[in-house]
Image 1 (cartoon, rainbow, N blue to C red):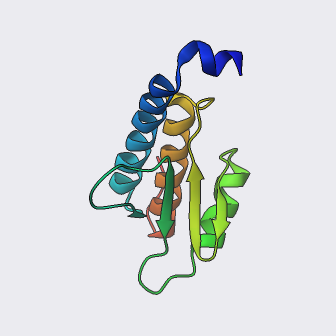
Image 2: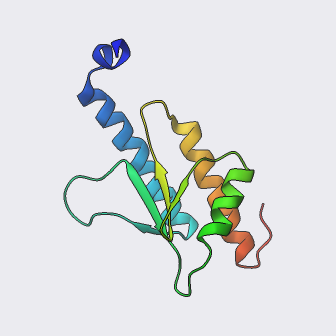
Amino acid sequence: MQLIEHCGTNRIDDYVSSLAGRLVNGLLAAGANVLRPQNGRQSHIVCVAPSEGGGETAALHQFLQHNGVRAAVRSDLLRFSVHFYNNAIDIDRAIEVTAQWYRSSQGCTPT
């Protein structure tokens, strides 16, 4: 609680919002179907929906876990929860592993 009081909730919110935006942009670039509000305040929760035809949520989740990236499955959505203890390295790792999965699931060789 002292850390939160020291940093201030507005500063923490700005930081976490920035990380969540970085995650959204990276996941979109990787080919993920990111669900997000079209208007208004963006959430610190980032969800990825299965592509048309679906079914890949469990496989992607397992791949992320195997590669040290934490996310959760809610219904058929993959849910990333960005918090103040996360940093750009965490976000970039989530993007990198997700992109690797999408490349390999489309028959491309990951780099």
